[in-house]
Length: 194
Image 1 (cartoon, rainbow, N blue to C red):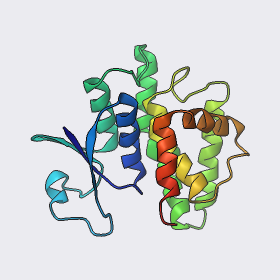
Image 2 (image 1 turned 180 degrees about the vertical axis):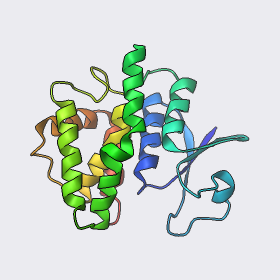
Image 3 (image 1 turned 90 degrees about the horizontal axis):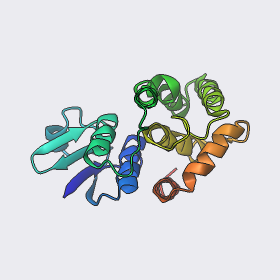
Image 4 (image 1 turned 135 degrees about the vertical axis):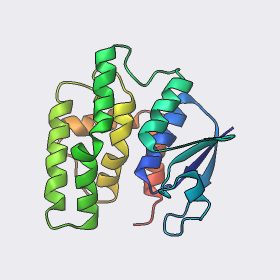
């Protein structure tokens, strides 16, 4: 059985939880206290970060790599488009995550002087990307959407970012929350300490 070294508050872990749920894969969840990481975690990932996926002697850190591994290992239902060009564009969303959302989300969370404005600029860009398309990778839901939704949920629920100024982004989030795997993450976020 797979083991996921996880932390509820970590959006990178949320990505993996959502993929596992979408694929219907059972796993053992081992919660890690990020403020007091156990020494043995560094044996599984020298950076001491979660998520880490483990099965027998196979140990894999880093959420984008884990997501792609799960997509290949458990191909049904597919979370990458069939078309090679569309697949490449979905992977590009993952590759550019820090520039397109992550860095500025964390700047806002830290309370950096211009962090909130930077985050709003990234949400403007996501709004533009989602105008006229239901999902980040086009017509179908997949890994690109899963890669971004944990931060959008946390921006709304934990940073108090109202999403109404971005109607396409809000409609995208509403579509994603219809999926049980994503709705379950909303419950996780609601239970986090503020």
